[in-house]
Image: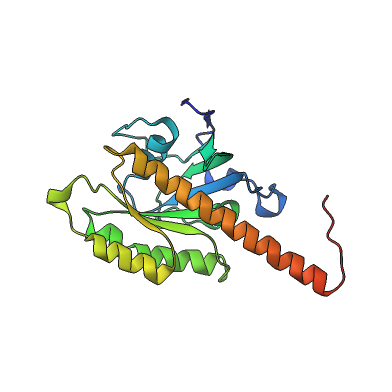
Length: 218
């Protein structure tokens, strides 16, 4: 796949081939690694491709994960996105240990026309917390398929309430009809990542400063 804005297709990435956490280069402020997680059929691939290419494609190969690298502007600054479109196997919703070690942030996706997909989100978040041993990570909650209002099973208020509980941003989007809101979802989570990195760096600077130590920049 190719698209505007400097998109590189790295599809076919399988779980065991993701770069080990301790060996991967940590993301800078200008990079965001996004893992798109959620139950089967909620539109994870449609969301990812809509953001990356501005096009909507209705059908995808659900048997393999795809990872894409994409350069664009966020708030006037150049941002490099790596987007991992996960496969939901064994009801894990894509939340495998290697994925959660690799990513900077998580996009939790459900479908507003599927109560079952919404009800799966708390268990998915629990899996994430257990895998990361309680370590926090930026995330955003996304309710996809809002264009199918006549089939809606999950209200906007329910999504908002869950996001407040998780302390994360929330958006309802339509991958098929609204590229701007889909784009905003990815931009919003990248802002969460930047703020998280800045807070983490400030904390580390304070720790080193308290002990009179100087960090190595190599």
